[in-house]
Length: 296
Image (spheres, rainbow, N blue to C red):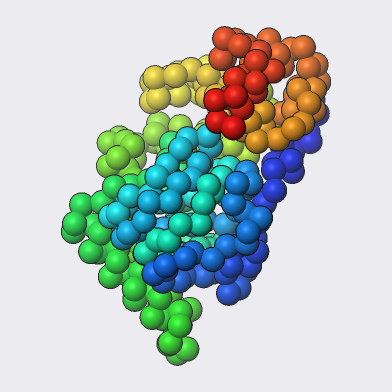
């Protein structure tokens, strides 16, 4: 099976390239224009960092994984490194933008923090509409983080880590309330681990048995738990992740169908065509032509 990574075909920008003061952590108050490199606008891209944007005012338009969004006041927008973004315009906005990399989390946060729903984003979400009390809480925490970042050299790192942990736990509570009400039971944890493994291995492993091996359980048991917890079969989750990346590449790149098939781990482009058609009732080429005609 071909193991070429699919992410190389879509540009990925570092925190510094996106206007951050350093390449690990950045927080800034935005009260007019949000400065980013001009090449980012109208260009499909990924960012190699997590970004949380607390919006107080603004109506700029953008896309995340082919879904259009218009900024709304009293809303928290969040993106993770694997999501594909397109910024339509640099209209003014007011709010606070917090960015941090996976490397920052690895060196400054506990392993439990990296497993939080707002970081793992199993539902591929992007926005959380906030009630007044949630908006006030988040603004208070992020303003304290901003003050630490700009003015407090003593105990700076420890305070930032504490504030970030509090922020991410609180946002994970809001995320869970929006996307799921399930308790953290063993079977639910297995589902989460399974989805995380798919996200890391979908270009190389297309079979349930491969993931069962990584989890050291039988494929039958894995399939039973995944269906019971999610309402979908284990293989459907694998196919959904592959199809999502296929759609991203068809929409955002000019790679040929054969190149995309190889990047996603298909040695036979004709099989990839059949696989895609089963998922969307149209060929990859038909999907590319229809979506570009619709959105360009």
